[in-house]
Length: 230
Image (cartoon, rainbow, N blue to C red; front, side, top):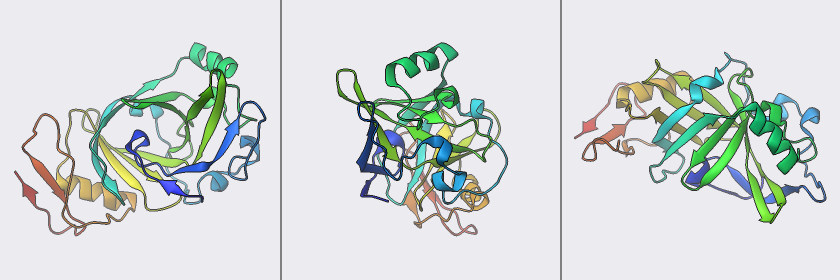
């Protein structure tokens, strides 16, 4: 991977700022081959077969619970379904970046206070979703940000879900709760355990739910011990 940085605009997704695919010259780097030439393991080296994800379960508002390896400022984001008409318009407006983007498979749009991007994938490959971030260099001149994909998993019942997002190239992971639900530390620890993701810190303060600004939550990597500060 190229040089990376972590920004909360895309929930700790690992971004490479060194390679872009442009609509003008259609230059494609080794990490951005045409989609039909890639295997699932090219897209996600950490991919493992698992149950499908119903992507409609992702629609709604989510807020930060926990991030690693570095904590970020708490933030909310919203996921909505794209319409067939919108996807047809995106083909005309942006193109396919030399086959890298299949707009018929970009069924979700992520919206944050800092901008928006798309998720490419239908959830059938164990929740594997590619992040489609398009930058406008000049008026009508667009480029595709080169970055790694993520594995998305939803835990819990409707209205009290926790969304786990894991980067396909390393230990970067983030947990989000469906607003306004807030999980307890034992619940979150159990979800990490089920996900096969080791929490990297002991006793880290989690982001505070906005409806309880004085409450603090602590996650422990040891499943036998959980503490909570109020």
